[in-house]
Length: 333
Image (cartoon, rainbow, N blue to C red; front, side, top):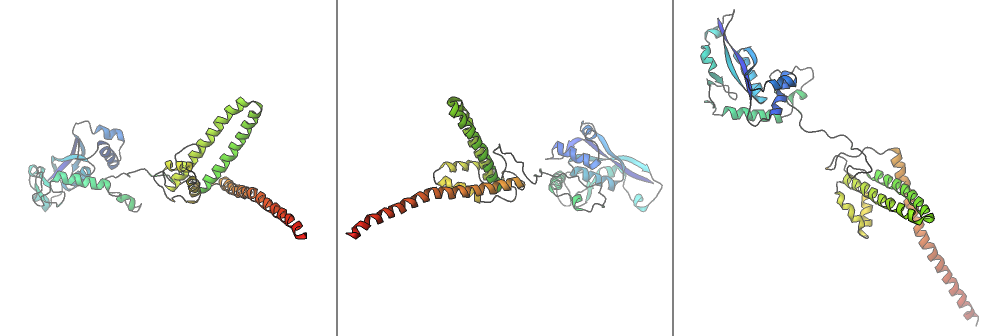
């Protein structure tokens, strides 16, 4: 008995709305082949991807490759000798007729080669293109299956789309990109203040000896402190989810003081926002610097209040004593 055998032919053509690089990647994963071999398939010359296939098996390969984006076709290889005679083979049509027939990829209806299905009425090329798009955008079924389950040789390869964000963003004090939390903002501000106070003291000492040189050194120290303060302030605003341009509100009298307090109080977003992933956890040094800065701020505030209140109280006491001394002689008269 004879049995019709088929081969799958590919001449480098793509399915509609499919990108060349996507199709190459899909074919490389489908055949588990090197990229150089896949590139050779797109030379324009017809290449037989599979040979000596039964009709049902050829249809499966045809559908899988079309879903991957390759416009392939099925061709007959002519009758082959078969040692087994079955009733199915006896009822098989002539090979030439089988070569000109096709199965609808949607309903399975067998009909002569045509661009439309006479049973369900679909346009076959558009239907296959739509199925390829859906397969590329759907989640990978192999990732949801158990690891022990064998992969189907006819399944369409799929790639993950998008770039995974890191768990934490990088830290860079000399940048307006990235995010920092409240404690890190307070700790960095404290460290910056101590460093620039030391630089101010050095420049002031040089200015006392050589005024010209000390004045020239004071300029980069002042500008550097302003630039670094702006950088870490912008990163703190990014952590909240606000634009860095809002830092300019700090320059407005009274309103800027309230806004600076908000920058210290308002918590940042726990997840990634439009400015990147959240900052890494605070180190012990940052925590110690932040609490030290907070303690020094409280001490400085209390000292300022005391410096204002104590002289006023002493002046009040002195006035009260003077008034009492002035009233005593009048009482004796």
